[in-house]
Image 1 (cartoon, helix red, strand yellow):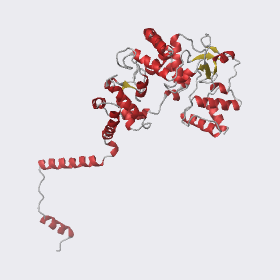
Image 2: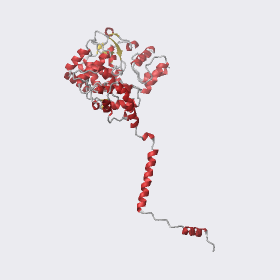
Image 3: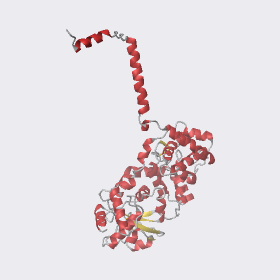
Image 4: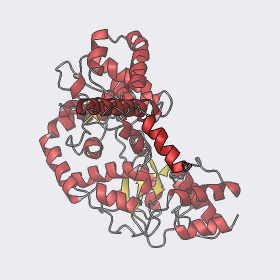
Length: 426
């Protein structure tokens, strides 16, 4: 009887030698080899983004040394500054938001010039009154403005940032954020360490490298910092007199005119006819008085100087006259809301009463709306500062001019309704 295919298969299998049995130790060795192979594959095929970045940062630090040495920084200072310093990737996420431009003036100023901060300002004015008086005598800068800057920049020394300034500046510089700006600031910070004003780990500040109670960038420190207490160090971190004197010196160096106030919080008469030029042109303060403008606290307007009008939220909100000294405050921070906060905080601490008008409740323009407004004005032949989605003083003066030419009250205040109207008129 012939064999079937099944029988043939059985015969072939029967002729094969028996396979040896795998021992327990062999099985263990096999598993070890398998997992080593898996680990090796994972190591070599993982994405490049997951690789640590210190090599690039270390190369940046190495390349920085020749320029630091040329500035007069010793190798010892350089090594001490960067000992244990690694980049902080979270900083680059913080480079876009700025409260002064993302909230209405009313919201910003209500939060900034609050009752607790005003009360603390009064306590600090009493505690450091002698130093403030002497600093005003030496620099000509109004002590209340100096106090206001101190309060706004670091909450009277309580909020200096807590970041390692070398780490912050090095992170931003290595990423080439804003070109060479932070690289230059980093070199200046190293020079400050070399001069012995502060130890590396005590050089603390904000995420962007603004330092101490004055929140000076290193370049400002080198130009404006003052050793007021005479201990041989310009200590804007631990010495309140040094911090206050440095703030006043900054303002003096930037053009503060002695004997001229920053401006005044004012009340406009009911029949006041606002003009587009009021937002852009400085006029003698006496002229404002002749037009019926009075100080909010009831005192007389200054007899000296010139000023221009600012209506941060239109005619429905508080009004201000601002002198050229107000523009000096803006050298600390270009935001008008910030400069108003400094000025109002100082005035409140000095006992001046606020405007009787409350801040209107409305939503701030979004960056997209602000950019659309700038583009709409430019298309109609009006000049704007820049296409950045931030409405500053120059744009407000342009808005007032558009309003005046189109039969509206030229208060220079952009609202969503006005943005839509300007856009529709193109």
